[in-house]
Length: 56
Ligand code: FES
Image 1 (cartoon, rainbow, N blue to C red):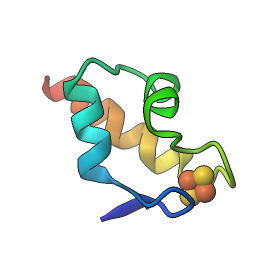
Image 2 (spheres, rainbow, N blue to C red; image 1 turned 30 degrees about the horizontal axis):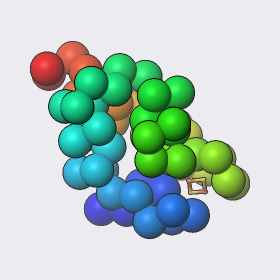
Image 3 (cartoon, rainbow, N blue to C red; image 1 turned 90 degrees about the vertical axis):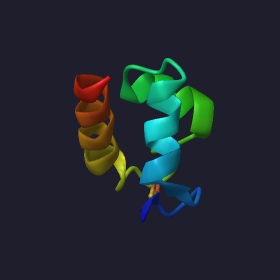
Image 4 (tube, rainbow, N blue to C red; image 1 turned 45 degrees about the horizontal axis):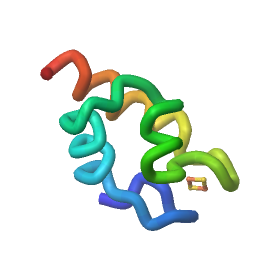
């Protein structure tokens, strides 16, 4: 599903970023640009990142 509509970023892409070593919203923002426009996706993106970090 799309998490960040501004950049068409999916939850799968965010999870892959965590698998590749990203551990925070700042890391994923740097890699994919998530949350750097309207900011509406920040809360959901943070939850996905946290959940994935806990799993890995
Ligand atoms: Fe992610 Fe707008 S939806 S920055």
